[in-house]
Length: 252
Image (cartoon, rainbow, N blue to C red; front, side, top):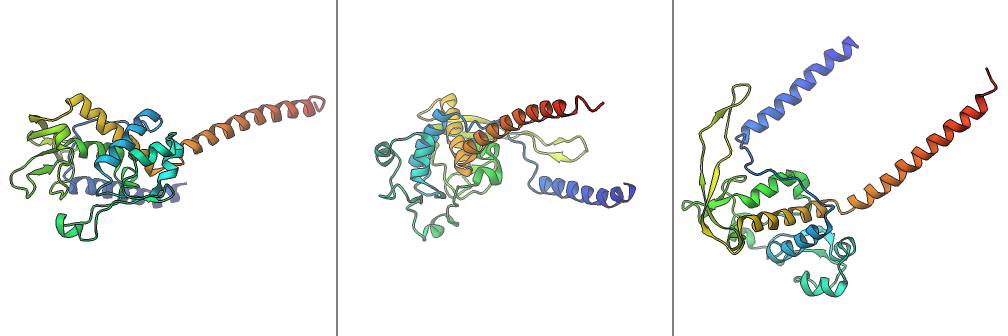
């Protein structure tokens, strides 16, 4: 056991150091908004699908998700799917692909990424904070910047809904180990949008819930199967114990 610890300890220390280095390399920026995804909330995911298709799918694809799979999972009839959610294809069996041409990289500096697994790669809380923290920045070509992804080439496409906000920074604070970390800034709404702050937060939460579902469409079915398997194993264990007790009752 001691020899195992001798080999494992340096490995664990290296992993810890690497995680710490990545955190500080990213600026250790605190997320100003707390978010817990709820992909099991069907109504929220349905609203999020509407939000994504109306405000995001023009630039961003979800090439690993097909329209008919989305409709089946979310209980959306095909006629409503084609009327309200399909803007770039005529076939329900097609994947969700944006109509953005290949030359889009020349417009934004980079091609808009596919968002199929964005919440699995960055985490739902990061995506939520990204959509919440666009702020006015006259130094940027499009006039806005983003807290979670400074220098992002994406414009604030939801600005008409959220409004336009100004970022007020807080001074850096020392962490528990003496490392400087950036405290979460405060955002002040300079120009109101079509939605109230509470309505916009719900809008973003619904959108991220949909993205969490899209990143793993089979999650709900897998969980349902897992529950059935656990119940079977529980019943089988009880029956096996009763059978064992019956066979061994006369042995002593």
